Amino acid sequence: MKFNKYNDKDFNIIGKKLKEYREKANISQNTLSNKLALLGITLYQVDIFKIEKNERTVRDFELWGICTVLNIKAEELFNPKET
Image (cartoon, rainbow, N blue to C red; front, side):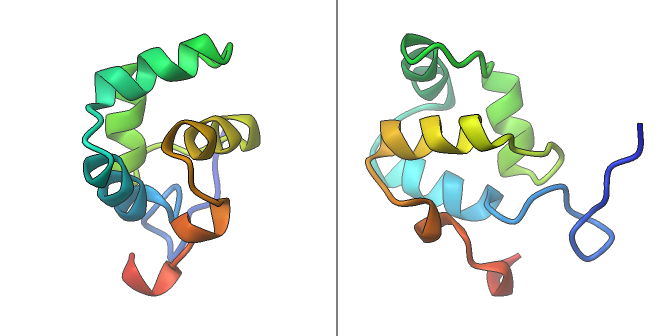
């Protein structure tokens, strides 16, 4: 299956902001993964790494979980000018 890419290079536009907000909250990728699991969302540490490196798409329920854990609004992660 072929996925469309943003600007023909990235699989998502939230990667940099996700890393910024995660680090600001002092949460490791592994801790984020564990907290997402408590919400019933399976997102491994390597998946979070790939999202932050714009190498993996983000599903809507994953975005919801990430925002819930980090206590932010989805809009805060969207800033395509910074990708």
